Image (cartoon, rainbow, N blue to C red):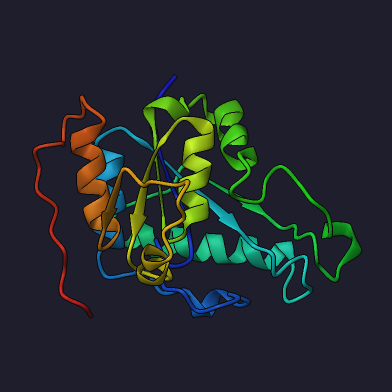
Length: 203
């Protein structure tokens, strides 16, 4: 089984804009391409795991989620970076669309999205890292035996101040590029662990 880095989507890989209902609204952080490309070069699986309750709430459809993910992949490909798989949860227990209104095993912090990646990709969560801007990402990491990194982008800076007593991140960093630097050092051996990552200036 191989190692992976599980990335939250909104606020971690792309800018947080609320309910993302159109692919035209996708905006990568300036450092996202460099960070994910470094994971690709290190031979790590890159997996995006995201709650998309907007489907259950009737704000957009699963087709829209897929369009957004295609747009993310297109933007990453421009810089030679790629994501191995996208997994998302369309459910919410208080949704307005009956088909998606339920308690499920895939809404983070439940481990269902990671479990699917284990089945599909053969990754070992115990050798892996979860990166996200909410404590629910850290809670999911703990459930599956992975390491958890909280980033201060998106909702992360606010979340850091609301530190739950029962959760501890392995580290808290400013952004995805710093999270990747930490992962490459702390989950050895990776051939690119000694290659410094650059945080580009905002465009």
